[in-house]
Image 1 (cartoon, rainbow, N blue to C red):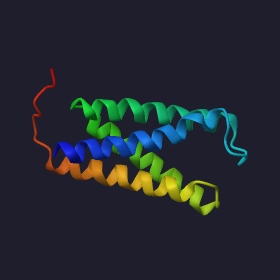
Image 2 (cartoon, rainbow, N blue to C red; image 1 turned 180 degrees about the vertical axis):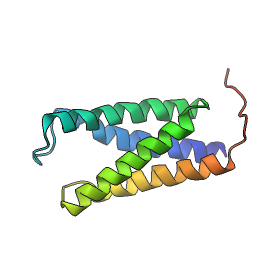
Image 3 (tube, rainbow, N blue to C red; image 1 turned 90 degrees about the vertical axis):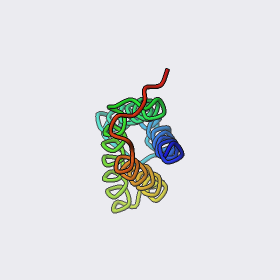
Image 4 (cartoon, rainbow, N blue to C red; image 1 turned 30 degrees about the vertical axis):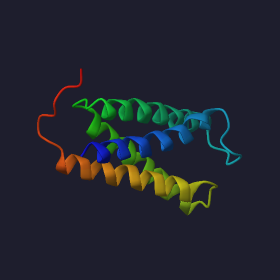
Length: 115
């Protein structure tokens, strides 16, 4: 179960690292500045959620699922608009979301706190 939790966290961190620089450089797709900053903030939120998942925080699993769902919806939009990196975003988002949902299903109700 720890492997599943770590795999979901790693997929979330990798996708989040790809989201972080969008506010500075959107790859020439012409995103409005507020949208670009929201994407970068989503990247930061994903990193925080994944670190929480690594530490078995109670709030982390729903946070990783939420970040994964937003990333997946964004990847579908990017794929429809034929933006660069859409397929990578789709695969990473689907992997992170799927692994997090699977972990949420099999995790114990009261995980042991990490000291």
